[in-house]
Each structure stands twice: as C-alpha cells, then as structure tokens.
Image (tube, rainbow, N blue to C red; front, side, top):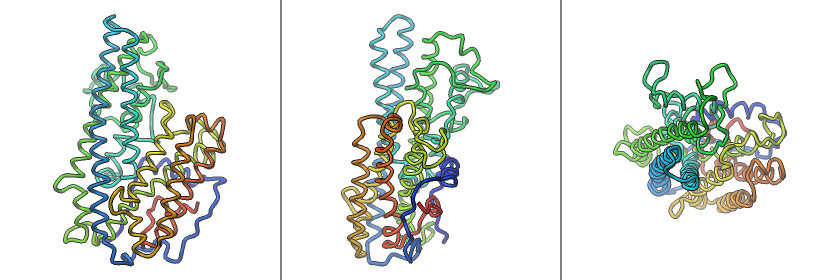
Length: 413
C-alpha cells in the first residue's frame, strides 16, 4: 500500500516557494543509513496502544474543545455586534462597547490558540479534498483582506452578482479565523483594496455604520467556523470516523495495511513544526527565506499581523507537538523510542521541545516588534525549533523506522 502524507494544500502552495528560494539557512542534519525507511516497526512495541491513546486522549479532546470554543466565539461576537447597534441608537455606553469587543477579541484568541494545536493534528477529514475543511476554517498563509472587505458589503446586501449570499460558497481566503482576526482587531475602518474593484459606497459611510457591517459579517464568519468545527468532530469521532480508521489499522478493508502505517500517518502531521512553524512562521519573517521585505527581518511577514498572536500560535504548535510526542499522560512516541532502545533520542527530543517552548515564552513583546528591535532573539527561537526538527528528521525517524513526509523530504535544512 502506498503511504500518504498530509497535504496542507494552501500552505504547501505558499511555503513551497519559501523552500525553493531559501537563503542563508544552515544545513546540519545528515540522514542516517536507514533515513526514511518504510519498514515495519523494529520491536514488539504496542503500536495499537499508542494509536488509541493519541486519538482518544490527545486529538479528540483538542477537536471537541475547538468546537466548544468556536460556539462561544460566535456568541461573544453576537453580543459585541448588539452593543455596536445599541451604541448607534444611544442605548448603551462606549465603555460597554469596548468591554464587549475585548471579550470577543479574547474569545478569538482562545479559539485560535486551540486551532493552532489542531494545525499539528491534520488528519482526515482535515486533509481530505486537498485540505478543504482545514482551509475554510483557517486559510493562512492565503488571506485576502480586500476579499473580506468586499464580502462585508456583499453579505450586508444579501447577494453576490444577483445570487443569494452563501458563505459556504465563498473562497477560504475571505473567511475563517484569518478573516475574523482582520474584522475584530483591525482598527483601520478604510477598505484595503488597491484594485479597481472596491466595496461599493464604503468610503461614504459613517464609522459606526462600518463597524456594525464588519461585526455582522464577523458573526456570520464565526457561525460558519462553528459549523465546520462540528463537521470536523463528526467526521473524526463518528462510527465511521477517521479516529476509528486509525485504531483499526491492519484489519481487513482498512486503508492502513499495518498499525505501523497508521503510526507513520500520525507522525507525518507532527512535521508541520518543520515545514510550516520553522520555515513559514520563523525563517520567513527573519529573512532566511524570501519575504515581503526581500531577505531581511520583516514584521509584515508574521502570521498574525492584526492581533499580534504570532508567538502564541508558535507556542501552541509546540505544545501540540509535545502532547503528540509524549502522549500527554499516556503512551507516546517517547515510549516507542525507549522500547526500541534509543533512550538518548527520547530524552534529547523531549529536552529540545522544552527548550523551544521556553524560548517562545521568554518574549516580552510581539514577534513583529521583536523582528524590529531584537532579531537575535527571533534567530535564537528559530535555532531552538530547528534543533527539534533536526532530531525528528534523523534519529527519531531512523530509530522508529518511519517514513519522512513529503513536506520535509526535500528540505536539507
């Protein structure tokens, strides 16, 4: 059976150019003699127990918590919208509007932090159909603020070119968690379009009218996210969901011919920390790969430019990796390494993940500000994450006889 890797389609399309145009990043990982070997597991380790623990006790709770948080986010945005409407009617105070906006913004942060853990847990259904479900929830790095501005007006009008407005038919770059960040945190009420197509009549509207229009569209976006979160949980946890497919690997009719293939599939998702976190979220803003500023530290290239949530995003990527690797409180990949006799790698990988987490937690400012005032600190964080991925791409893969995913196979960094 052919082994398959997560596609992260929209991410891969944007990040591929980063990898191909990389400059200045050192290469220190040499593949071992069994690098990327797809052979069976070299021990009697209970891979079924590893799969069951990770699916039931790590992934499932992360998915369901995101669903709950997205529901709360929808409610909080609704409350904020009503406060803006009441303020226009002079039925509430500016302070009450500010409070409800702060609550909605914090709700977005909580929901985004949870999603950033899911970013390292991209299995079916998130990777089906070229990552369609993932992308409608979070499309970064493909985001169109002009498209969002246009859809604010289209949603308010209730139609697109004469057809009823339907957010489920809109492209991912115009909705999802990315759009909510722009709508909730961007204080500039002017539209961002630089082409001939602009939101009709937008510049002639009052500030309050524009705030209400943006908020009402934000509520629609949040509702769509929650619907997609429910779909994610249903397709993952249902009787015929993918969690059960993983846990029954090796049985007749299962897409995974062996339990080891299922373990490899879970491992593949963890390499998001390499191709996306390390390269897209740190190396690119640093200028190690081409960015908006050329090849130098660039605050404009960070993942979360409006909410300044970039460091929390990276932190939650690392915390998710830590949970998948350690199994949280159950069986994890660290136990697998110990079982095959590679205790040194088990300890080293745990320590390097801890060091990378500590590096991100040490910031006293946003990532964008650090790129301007202390790029050495960002370079150190990149090095700490790279220390993790160096181990993953060599000793970890070799000792567990796992296959390197396509997203990292061509990366010699």
